[in-house]
Length: 377
Image 1 (tube, rainbow, N blue to C red):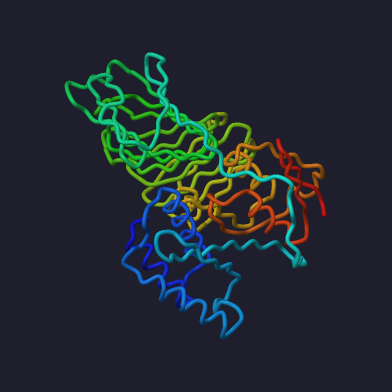
Image 2: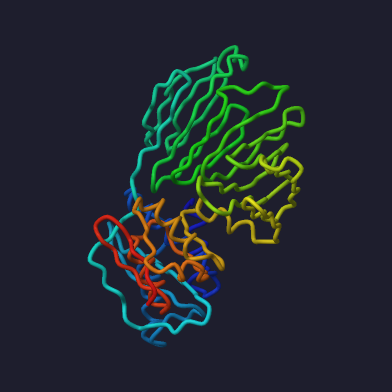
């Protein structure tokens, strides 16, 4: 997030007009900025901001917001404000005032992002700029300074070589890649994308996905873009969409933000769905359902957030397991179907998430050195 956007969000928060998701975006940005030793929003008078918030606390004994927020003040080179928040709701719970205490905790995992070249070589990627990671089929593969891959044609690129690369993201990691045709892809944690080093200008552009990714496809009417997963095929010309299709996941989700896409079930060739912006296709092995959604919610992960909207607890815990690289065990199967809604920074420790869910009164968690156990309260 750039400084001007963060500044606007802080001002919006102070006026009491920010949404829960905007507050969580702000916290996520702050955590990342401080971890990277940046000086966030140096142009703001943080002393004045602190006085303003503390003044409201003294006057009202709570923040003047219509939702629960937790506020804390951090100090780096100068006084800086951190607006930390998380809100979880569960249908008809009795909220508890006590805070669970866990014997262990997990920070987001730091798995490796690995690029596999066409000759089988594996390269571990980092956030440092690298003008040339490799060169294949006349295409230069470089690393951007903020941690992403860029494929650029340098000389007589030959798509007939059909050389394929694969990008794997580790637990607790996201990674961005700009393909040779200009298409931009963001990969979520524990995902992989296989793609040609160079696309044929007049043929289909085909990539294969396992996991979750957000695509901004470069438009080319002569060359349709296809994403193939284990069970589905998504066909587009130029559009923005999110595709979540982790192996073993019961329900796959395709969400369209812009343009138009056609989704086909590979196991049932006659089953096709065409989506419009703001629609989400949820499908399993037997049923496909299209619903109207706030499409931006589907890519909250790209902004550093966990966002759940009436989501089953077992699905939430799958996301947590991937991000923190810790197994999750349910000792009571009945709690899997409980629905939760909430937003929190993905850079929080796992105890912060579980504590707030547990305070809702329906489930309890035990964090041990090697797993998280979920049971009925």
